[in-house]
Image (cartoon, rainbow, N blue to C red; front, side):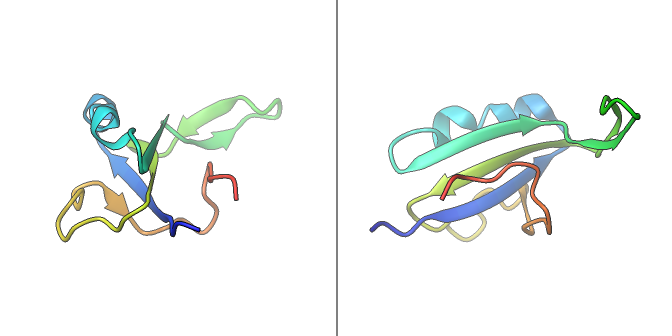
Length: 86
């Protein structure tokens, strides 16, 4: 079985983050653009505010090279908004 490496990405510019998709959404890689993540909700579950910035998940069959995507990678959140299927 191939070892998979998951990365959580964050950027202040959603368009710039989306531009990574063609590079990282190919064989051996899967790029999942999430966009903004809600921070608070009203009583009906409608988002009221959002976390700052834009988010994406990246799954690779290799580890990132040193410095590769370092401007976007963040520590894994305690409760990710979206995760990969097992």
